[in-house]
Image (cartoon, rainbow, N blue to C red; front, side, top):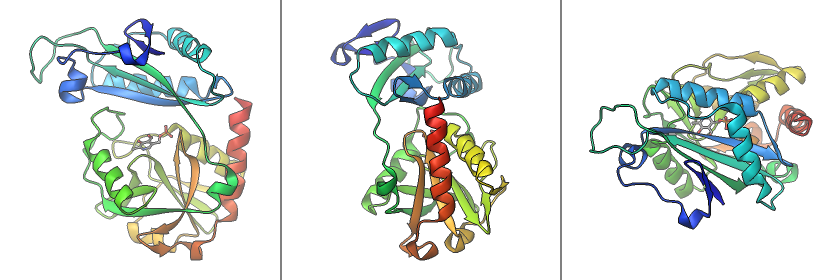
Length: 278
Ligand code: PLP
């Protein structure tokens, strides 16, 4: 069961026009929202970011917060899974001819649930590999746009290197991961790129900062050079589906001799407590 333009229908019956601007241009935005034990996690934060993305590309938000919550509840009532991620996509809608400029159209809204199985702490404690690459994306990475060609290219590179993530740097400054935010921990201080046009302002990023603060780390939302990552005490990535994940190898070099840091363990535990507090 999926939601498409006001209807709840089986996924194999859901289709959109070839003139949909999402299909033609990737002219749309999206959100991925975790649901733990039936509770949508940080709903308002995700919907606020959706609103920012829609505003940035001048699409009117078709629904209220209550309406989204109602749609999610309806989809959840048809699922047997315990944890989910909501995929919510809004494109500008179906046009009459293929042209870059646009008039106001009825947006296409597609929402589905996917099962979510976050990695367990023992799994995460094995540590994960990343590679680094220059950030060749555009300069509006704050918009959660469905046009993800750069991210797809990075994902394939990661796959070919058997890496979990690609850590990006713009003019040697670490920005974020191809699908996550990046944190460097050095001398009890957490460094992460400030919000703005060069990163997506992750909802999990905020929760990691909150957790790190709770665990006594100093927080520096400031830039770091890519070279600094190799001498970090700890490196983490975060996203709604991966939560907070320790990276122990970057470009085949071990971080902190490949050992998982104590800060990660504490922050992970605090993050879990936030999850279950709702
Ligand atoms: N940065 C990028 C480029 C992403 O694609 C994502 C998630 O998909 C994130 C950061 C993390 O965002 P969130 O924590 O809201 O999932």
